[in-house]
Image 1 (spheres, rainbow, N blue to C red):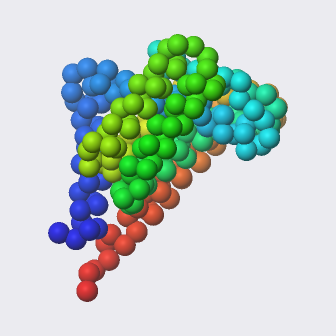
Image 2 (image 1 turned 30 degrees about the horizontal axis):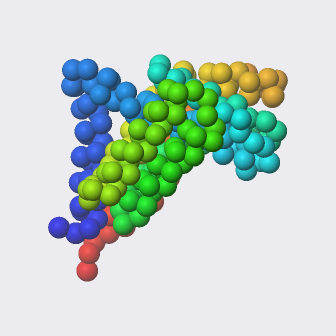
Length: 222
């Protein structure tokens, strides 16, 4: 089987697996609970990156048991920081998805990098024992999976795709507080409008990423 054909099968299996767990397996949403916490981390880490790249600093990062989170920052561009949560987490999810699908040889490195970002966040942006313990546990699991298995690419594909789908499905709930603050910055545009603008941006990013991943998959082999 060609490499492109194998890629299509992998993408389909990962997509079907996620849908099966979430909608057809009893307690599937409970099984996907770690994905919710991962998305929360990516969301808050997106805020943190928004602060850092615009000259601000991060005071703390928090992930809660109910799937909510909080990132405290100082300085930086407020608009970029707020947008960095929802859109930033979608970008990070798409990066994981792309690496797992298209460049699996870098998957182990990507998983270890993700693990190191969690260790750094949990220790240097300490907010509480639950957050730090959770991030260190995630990091340990990712490092062990990268070190001891050859499934890093498939794992990243699943984590990335599941994160993207969850972010899209959660568009009218997840970024509520960010949208409210964003509307306060741009008072002439209500939060409901920004909600759909952000959703469109995330969907377009996902479609572009899928197009890049599948590029060449339907070309005739000669």
